[in-house]
Structure formats: structure tokens, C-alpha cells
Image (cartoon, one colour):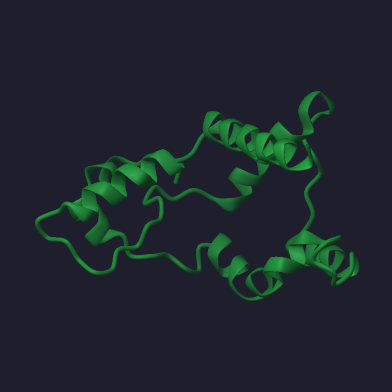
Length: 135
């Protein structure tokens, strides 16, 4: 979920008359990982065309082959997550129960799938952060 949408939902849940100690914050509007990857590949590829995609196992082999030093291979910082949870999350194996969150948050109820505009804004934001870090 976009951060502004998540913030609105969080405030609605915090001030709900039915406040609960646990809510699952996940966009309740399901969409495929392959669909999201296609959007990201197009945005990152720019004028040269979409970036090529790799099967997950081949990509993980390349991540592991880039070395164990998290300073030169930043993916190593989340290696355990990538090896144990990421695939289950992206294949739809793991779906968080959002019923309570939707009961207590209008924003969660009305949340829609992410589109190209959302991803373009997200990628632009990440690029801006990275530019500021390298200054």
C-alpha cells in the first residue's frame, strides 16, 4: 500500500471504537507479482524498453554469487527474508487477514490495486533518496 494510504488507515484504526491490538496492514486488493514486475521493469528500463526478468531461483543465484558483504551486495542485508519468506509472499501462498482492518478503516475497505502511477511515484521517491545519500 502507498504510505499515505497506510497512514490514513492506521489513524482510522487507532481511533476506531473497536480498536484491536493487532491489525494486518496489507493492500486487500490482490494483484499478481508478475504484473507488478512488468510495471517496474517498464519504468526502470525507460526508453531502452522493459528490463529483462529472470526466474526467481536464477535471480537468487546471482544475488548469492555477488558476495556476502552487505556493503557491496545490499541484498545480503535481507538474505534470510529473500530465502525464506519472499517467495511465499509473492506467490499468494501467504495472505494476511485484513477483515478486522477493513472493519475499522474506510481507507482499507476502499483500497485499490496499485497502478503504473503509484509505482512511478515510488521509484522516483527511491531514486531521490538514493541521490541524496550519494551527495
